[in-house]
Length: 494
Ligand code: NAD
Image 1 (cartoon, rainbow, N blue to C red):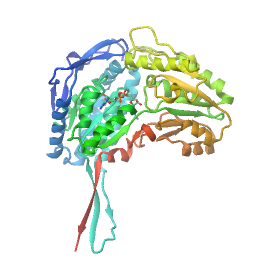
Image 2: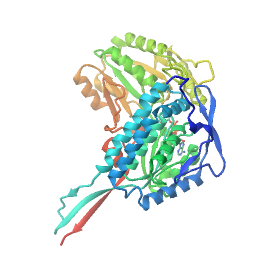
Image 3: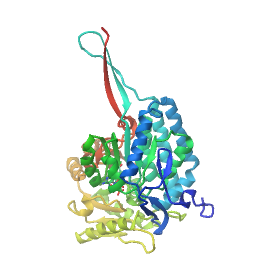
Image 4: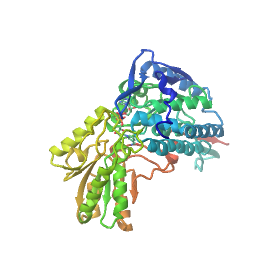
């Protein structure tokens, strides 16, 4: 799509509303905020800021839709059909959704179309199938007498879904689709910075004919709307993706009614490049892994460990890749790296780079902002980093790679260096030696390990973190079962 063919999406023609019980409403308080295009700092539209009042209305609507049965008692095959229709609608409206995503996040339009929107549609298709496949099982009990004993999988109820701004539509869909497949009704809160595609998704959900109250979308600030969801006694489960600090703070609030809680949190993922690796592939993947989506990826490979014998070549290769990536507004046809999400995030990322310099790291690529109105940061490579530095310990969520060397450390020692973090989301290993690969896989404390690959995201594969990277798993059977309760039934046949 060229800029001449681009039509401003209708969604942006008036202030945004929220979807509650099948109606589009503004916040009762009238509170609102600007939605900003991070590529140029300009206001795109205004969004309504919901709070406890709107959250309560949405929870009541979701409860009615759940209890009275238009969703939880709908035939599973019918739920599958509606979810597949929604996937189709995402594809049909893919150009418009990609444009909205690019305007709101600054990510390259091509990437938004090929990755974010397609991934959301795939996610819906994958989870749609689970509606007809969830099941309990009979159990051979040894109680005295004659018993028929079995388990039932039932939807957990009303769920609050809170998502971040880095992959807005795909994150929203990755929560909505397993929840709906399981028979739950939902209240989605997009990140306040990126409400656009979630609200367009709401329009599509309505147009397809999902019953009112099954999907509610409340926009608003984390400490207001988000907190109200976590606080609400009518919410049975929270599924949250975001920062580890907010994730931890949610736990105390959720304890009120002992809500079920799933958390997908931050990461500081190691990438190991051994001397025998296919270095060109490893360098390409390592660069994509940290600079893709401007480093705003929970599983970004932000700590590189490279064998000393190939370190010069690998670091030089990464420096070249970092320098040659075209940093530009997301709508620019040659954009490879867009801005970070906000001026605040740019300051945060630059603060980390400065702290790295102050602690003795050397910036060998990037390290600067880019002139202009957008929130751009150059892809950055740091060398001479140590495990105690802030840039190595903390999640930056920006295009900043720290590199460390290893010699002929034992795999035990090397894995321990990789595991020296509070996080445990992802890691990747580059080697041609099967033994090295398998031994590292077993030693790494991370929910996702890739060998000779960077991302390899597939909806059949559980995704989630060890340690402070989260609780629970998304995707796969586990991802849908996370939205269910298990009931044991025993019938005395005597
Ligand atoms: P964030 O934690 O600030 O916000 C995430 C969401 O939580 C937003 O919708 C926000 O409004 C809401 N929120 C904030 N404070 C809240 C509160 N007190 N109560 C309830 N809700 C609240 O995170 P962010 O800056 O939007 O996103 C970046 C973070 O998300 C990074 O740490 C990243 O690693 C993480 N992330 C993790 C995954 C994963 O799958 N593990 C995926 C993407 C992003």
